[in-house]
Length: 390
Image (tube, rainbow, N blue to C red; front, side):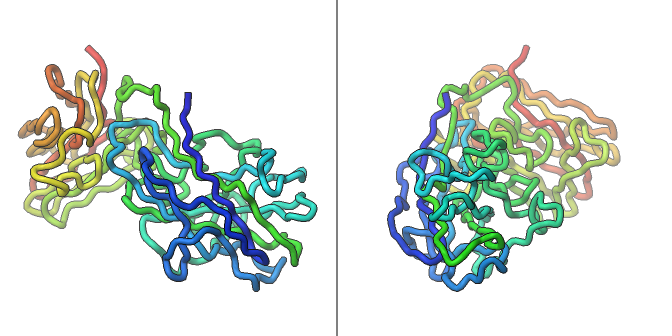
């Protein structure tokens, strides 16, 4: 059973201003604030609008005068399978207006005949963009030229499925900041909305009462499945059950980590790590930057519950034979404590490294995995995961 917490956002276009909107949600499991704010002054409001001087049908995609502010509540972190999805529902019997046309029902609906819907798009960012540009649709009409906007779907569309990648703005893989990339879990995120006006018939009113933002999760899903991935195949992998924890750099500023598509262990890419300084490394954390939130770091209530895992495994290779200075998992405040291992010999061939977790209390683990490398080292990591097994 999937539990949904829905927020109806009443969404209206130009030529009419009506304020009838629920704008604040408190006490959420993952997102405790969702509200509309004006782009002009960043103050809360109760409606999303476009300028009344839009010249139809000559205008194309235009960004609305407001954005949707969401606040990510880090205290959720022992839960898996969560996300925030955005879509319209213009064919339901409670919609106002109810779309009755034969085309795609997604968007803002013309209120007279109710047979025309102007398409919508959304973009999620980890920072405000005061002068955000209007999106430009690609020639193939399959997306946008900057790859950062996403077409909105409607629940009545044939392509719609709950938790479908294209409607999920934020999940455990991060925000969908790029068409093919999901990365970073910011505390504050901002969703911009655009509408396409080139097929509008005016002057008239276009609106929808059914733009929905829903937080979802599966309450029956176990906290640990057969595999609990830290890194499977790139940060863009957006399955809510994959790619947990967020990487954070340690050490000198000359360290570098990137996607690498040459000779991965599996899939299409792996992690390439370079250290040009005295020492450097990466810590995979949940919540992000958790080591800076308390001495030595928070205890129960943060991280993931990995009870049932019997081992932590990863694959590693290097350009030249070298030694990984240090690796391990856990933070001092975690239930398992910090576990350190030293001087791993690394060859030019992929090799699997296994850490035995027998006897460890894994009820809250904020530090999923870490490594430290010496100066001048270049190596590759892939398929980092906790496992159930013998």
